[in-house]
Image (cartoon, rainbow, N blue to C red; front, side, top):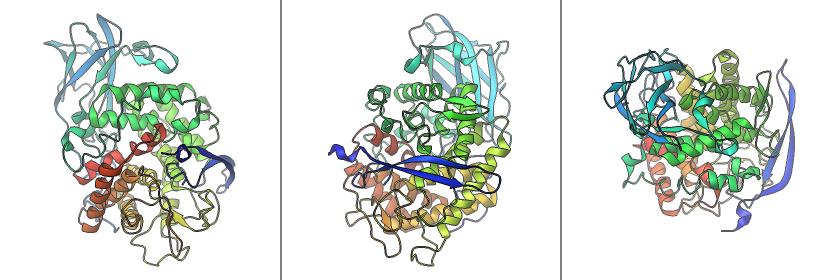
Length: 536
């Protein structure tokens, strides 16, 4: 594979965004990419209320049938990191909406001993139930390799919560817990906190088992990241989120360790002033929105209880609000699906964990979604007046490309689809119905028009009379599969054409998919790993 597939073009675009009255006009530097580099980041119908895929504001997307029930009792595996004897062990347990309302209803047992524990609710769903509960116990890790966790059973009390950093070791890029706590994939997936995922073991040997070879978490771990971390390209697409989702579907230590270390490294490089991020760790990317990630920060908080990461998520949302105008005017105003997606993800995940900024962050997310829905159905570029199949069309110039025609990026659409789905699951109601109809429209056009004659997803999908641009590589099957699968699940799982297209794309990933380097792993293993749950 040619190295030219991976390196950024030197083009830098300066985009000044003029916001609505009372907001600032901000400038952000956007990095365009080689048009010959398809691996680079550049490049339905409404469901009745209560129907399949409809959320009710609890964050789960009730009725979508993608997530198995959580176990009432499970085993947590302890992995000491160079320590012995009695240690303070810190971890957090994610839950689906409605699973638990009182953090005291968690019992931790070592052998036959009911351990005194400190417990704290970290975030709640719209119905008031708990999204995650932080737990600390003192336990002899030399003689107790596992803990038994019973949910819905009152456990012993009497322990005072310690600062999370007192339970860690190392510094710089090697910060780790003194004792790793591995939770089972069945619990992590059932929590819905990571989105719609299922344990990888449940699809092993089936046609849906297409990600195991692509998403090799040990091969593309923190060591691989650090080897290239002086170049900002390896930071793309929120590595912490990719790894935490890998942990959720495997339950393995490797992605957990990479997620923990890299989330810590990302937060440590942030400067926060007056509740807003003013600097991030990514080299030369302090003014580039596509490197600003709250999702990985929020997931880390929900799995550790470290308040510093909640504050980081809130700060990133505040910064992003001043970096990108979600309203697209149809011209060469800089706008891509990736920027739109990461902007909304910044707000959505900060909204999940915020302790004191819910109204402001929620308003940012709602403004963005309103703008995106309007962009999708706007009559531009000679598109058909039929809006049943629509992407988020924009000019090639708005995308930083020189194709000279309007269109969409099928694979970058996965980032925006992920964000829109997260919004629908969080807010529920009529808004979720609107958003799921939008996801249906997006999946339908990609299934119909987003592939070349061999079935491979296009690099650039022209709209109207505009031409397509083929992808010369096989690194984006999964993202298109995810978008089409999400459309199928969001519109009631009845559209046979969507299901067929999704299955074909998954098969293409399994037979032809490839990973060229760290950045390629990052994008392929971030959103698309949710596809098996949607198609199961």
